[in-house]
Image 1 (spheres, rainbow, N blue to C red):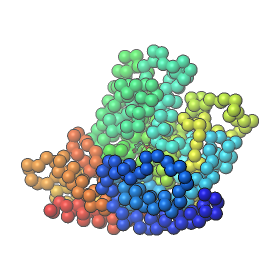
Image 2 (cartoon, rainbow, N blue to C red):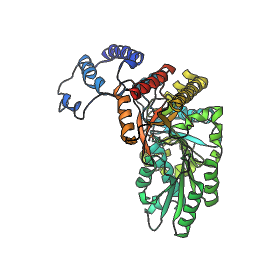
Image 3 (cartoon, protein in one colour):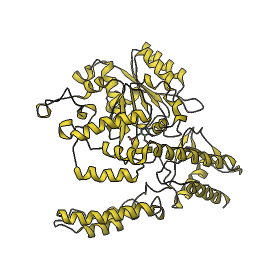
Image 4 (cartoon, protein in one colour):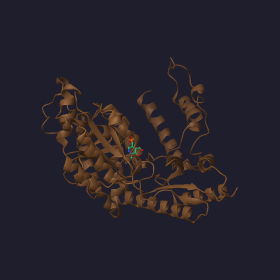
Length: 467
Ligand code: PLP
């Protein structure tokens, strides 16, 4: 493809993209596709000769489009969203075109400095502690791994980095509601899944402080090294928050690293009515939130903040001759702030989103989402056969049906209700289980969500239950 062909194809593609986003509602959110269907339509090996863009686009329409989940559909209420926005898409087009590899200042000066400033903008927007410094990571899972490895190195005085594990018995603590990425990080960091202590939660699904305190005390007696506590702001299952202030005080007392996982709900810190969440945040050693979940920035874009950047650098920095420059002391070389050497130019999309939406535009969307979640929760509360299953702090509503008929299995009934909602093609919701009870989760966080979608969801559920 020469540059003139590229220009023509790119124009065509932009038309396609704008039409898609304008008409995304016409697609079923979740395709009815069985495993292997897509594979069976693809060639077994790459073509020997060049194929035309039009032919590839035609296959894209026929093979990909009918078999893909439409994450940008307003009816996408599953998991947590990976929401995008037009400014973010525009920036991603530039990122792909420049195709920079932003491992250090020297390889992309503008990218490095834009990243530094974007982290300052986010710190200001979310009212995070002023002394923190931030870096963009690919995912919250990676950021949490960085936090746990940093904590491991601090507690072992960098012995594990240099000589590997000897006799250290490290412990990490998190609530029973914590995200699976914490266990994964504990495994990868060599600490061992058995040394992740899951602390039970109270009736609001928030970490039980007495349990945490007694786990730390008994571990100390047994010769373990309490290394890190992970507090969650907005758990994946039900959106609960752990008591950061109390956990932070305990961590300070026992010299334990505090990592705050605010992957989804962290964006709410941009709203004055959620400033209660920041109580005690200054006690944290690290904090992660995902603009790629609820801040309208294409996946992947994770903001990772640390109290002491030197610990991060001492943990991850390795400087071979071929990467040395004369500017080491003057600039941020983000290759040392995380795991991969190579890094995408992710700051650009944050710059576009924050400038084109403005802080007020982002806040307005967040407030709409939270308010519509409230309206949906009210519908659940008022319906005689539905009940709320967890307190609602943000835009996630956890509910289930509880019909008056006594001879039904409620878990089966709710599983079927969820399948019927999703089979409508209008919405995609997912579930979790609490105390072995099947619970339906509805997340109101999609960029293109409108109030009418919430009314449609209420209407659909009412109709299904009437049948
Ligand atoms: N932490 C929480 C609370 C989450 O809900 C999630 C994902 O939903 C993650 C971490 C992992 O996020 P990522 O996909 O960016 O690794």
